Amino acid sequence: MSFLYRLLYLLGIVQDPTPHTYNLNSDLHLRIADLAQQEQLTPEEITEQLLSQALHQRYAVSETWQRWLTLSRREQQVAALASFGYTNAEIATYLGISIDTIRSHIRNVLVKFGVTSRKQLEILLSGWNFNDLIPPSSGGNRE
Image (cartoon, rainbow, N blue to C red):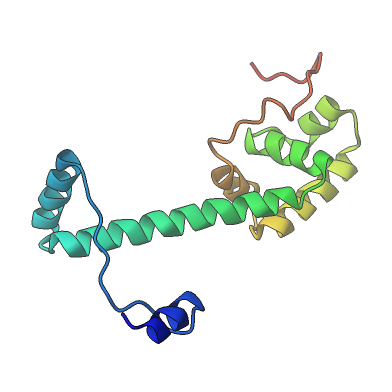
């Protein structure tokens, strides 16, 4: 690659036309080959699809985290409790605030995450650990 072309590439003006290769351990290579055979694609096509899906998923997780950071601490608490399936009344009791305030927080959270239902929010936040966010309460536990 010429110096000028390399400089243009580093500046992001042109793309690198050379194909990139990555070393895979033998087990992963075999799994990709098996999947390629099942899907009737080449191992390169399967690898490209898998990397594309992984990058897309990673981007989605990063975007969700950035949206989470736009929430106030109270909105985060409400979102966490809502994602566990608590009702507005249960969240209000748990946090010691009014149901109307909970409704307002829920509306704000749904808008900030770009979802239209609590179920979508629950799916989006499934698997998240909220242990440091939800305060202990004498009456709000669902266990």
